[in-house]
Structure formats: structure tokens, C-alpha cells
Image (cartoon, rainbow, N blue to C red; front, side, top):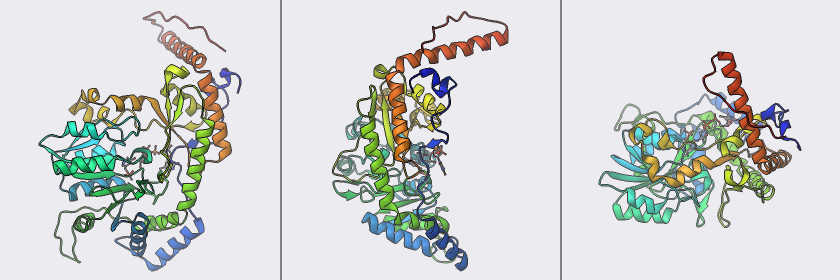
Length: 424
Ligand code: T4K
């Protein structure tokens, strides 16, 4: 592409005929999945701790090297159950740089999420800031392994120990990741996974809690099944958090292809790293060597001062080209309801979060992407960044034209709008 007027945002043909998605599901061996579903139908066991759920839990626990892995109907309910089983109350310290499910799982139970800033290098909760947020009402810390980058678990464990706080991790992004050679699933009191369709390992909808604590595991098992102990004996308050058999069948099938999913993601990551190198104002979020990662999120930081375009303008241009880049996690949980009403000034304590939510965009990866599409996408990003200032002027021009048209339709122009000359 040599002419910015040919960008789809200015009326040109989109670069991709089919939409490229962040979160397009990885699907394992279809024949295996269908065979498992046939067996499930034959035995008429569809849910309530069927054989697939039992098998999946054993396989997950073995893979993670953890004593207990309790599957759940989704990651959000898994978080809610873990929070309740840990007996959290009052306030829990949590990053705002996360999916809204993390604070909602607390607020849903009338526990106040106290938003804490992130370390801008790792994008995970900053232990130094955590210390500052502790009050007499604090009952726990809920860290998030954002985009698969594992929190500083040692520092958080130390703080939790000093203040006798529970330590829980939202590991929705970190299935298959490690820290200091130890698999995620083994840190804190418990760790919560999401196996939603958009995660690199999925069970359609689903999740799990991993823990090495026998008593906590027993409590969560009761809670996820209405508190039933035996056929008609309820000994605890509970809910319905159970994974069903068809989801477990998908999980078992996905586990058999896990190495392939990881290898594909890693190759895509390396390709993005190579092909996005030296583009002005574009920086890939990198992972430190020596650990295991799932590379399921390709996060790219846009520096408007260097490429002339804001992250939002970039995302708009890519959407027009049929690339559904995502602004995870704009605008930050503290700027979403009900939290923005509860804590209108929370942002003042979250400078690194406020910066990150304005600058990052996520790009497609996974088995639905191929290296040719990544090359074309990286070429497109290079072209946009290298022509950022000129594109910016034309976007302004386009907005002004739209305003002028709106004004002329209303036939009552209220203010004069001066045109910016178009650049080609
Ligand atoms: N904690 C964290 C840190 C999380 O990120 C999440 C979930 C949770 C907790 C809660 O876990 P769950 O209760 O969800 O198990 C998506 C997912 O729905 C959500 O699971 C995920 N995080 C979040 C990061 O992403 P949206 O609102 O962005 O979803 P949506 O529908 O816009 O899908 C994203 C893209 O994926 C779209 O462009 C389309 C594509 N897609 C989606 C689905 C469902 C497909 O191509 N096929 C599909 O089947 O939240």
C-alpha cells in the first residue's frame, strides 16, 4: 500500500476479506471431540461430575503439578467461589488493569475492590503499591497474571504473610505459564483459570480453581454443588458452579493439542517480534526468556508522540481493514460502573494503569492465524505508523467534513468549522 487514501478507513478496500479476531478459538481434533460427545450421549451422563469432568480434573492437576484442580462452569464463578471459600471480607487489593470480572467477583459479594497500580514493566500488580493500600479492613490480595505474565508472587506472598492476608491469583490468562520454573496453579492460596472460548485452551465456557490446600479444595467442591454432601444433605451455602460433560470433552480434546497450540502461539509471537521491530512508536510487550508462557495475547504499545497516531486511531484504522484489534482493558475497571461512582478519583493513584489503558492494543494470534496474515498485518501496521502524521491530518479532515455535513443537514449552523487541508 503506497497511498493513504487507499486505507479502508478512507473508503478503500479492506486489507483482509475475512475478519481477523483476537480470541478466535483454538479447536483440537474434531473427530476426537465428536467421538467423545457420542460416548457422552450414549451413556446419558451430561453433567454433575460425570466421567469426563473427573478425568479432566485429574489431567489438569497432573499437568499443573498441583494437588487439586476443581473445574467450574466459567472463570467468573470460579473467582466468586474461591473468594467466598477463602472467607474474604471488607476490602481486597486488586489491579484495575484487568477484565471487569476480577473486581466484579468481589463486589458481587459486597467486598470492596481497592484498586492498586501496576508495575509498568510487567503490567502486574505492584507489590510496593500493595503495601500502601493495606488498611485494617483488608482481608486479601487478588493478583492478576495479565496477558500471561506472572505476578511477583514472592513479594506478594511476603506481604500476605506479614499482614495475615489471603493471597489469590486470577490466572485467567496464565494457563500453562510458569515462574521460576513453577507452574501457575501453585502460587498463593489458590489460582483461578478461565477456559472461555477466547482463551488458548478452552472448554467453550469453563474455568477451574487450583490449590494445594486440602481444606480449601473441599470447601470449594461443596460450594460449587449447592453445598451438597451426599444425596440429600446440604451442609454449606453453595451455588451451581459445575462444569458440564460436553465442556469437559472439549477440554480433554484440547489438552491433547496443547503442545501444538503453544507452539503455534510461540511462532506467531516470534514473527510479530521480528516484523514489528523498528517501527516508530510501536513496541511489542515482551516476555522474559527462561520461563514457560502460552503467548495467547499479542499486546502492542502505541506511542502517539512517535508515530503521530493515538492507539484509538490505530484501532479504528485496523477495524476498517477487518482486523478486530482490542483495547484490553480500556478504560480500566476504576473507570467503569459501579467503581467510577464509588471512587471517582481512583485514577490519581493509578498513573501506570491510566497510561497503559490508553496505549495498548491486542492483535490476533492462535491457530486461526497463519504466518502470511501476520506478515500482511505487520506490513499494514508499519505503513500506518510510518505515515501516522499524514493519516492523522486526513482523519481530522474526515471528521470535519462529517461535522459540516451534519451542520448543513440541521440547516442551522451554530459554529464555524475551519477545514484542515487533506494530505495524500
Ligand atoms: N479474569 C480475567 C483476567 C479475564 O480476562 C476473564 C475473561 C475472566 C477473569 C473471566 O473469565 P470467564 O468468566 O469469561 O471464563 C472476552 C471473554 O469473554 C472473556 O472470557 C475474557 N476474559 C476477555 C478478555 O475477553 P470480550 O467481551 O472481549 O468477548 P468478545 O465476545 O468480544 O470476544 C472477543 C473476540 O473473540 C471477538 O472479536 C470475537 C472472538 N470470538 C469470541 C468468541 C466467544 C470468536 O472468534 N469466537 C468465539 O466463540 O470478553
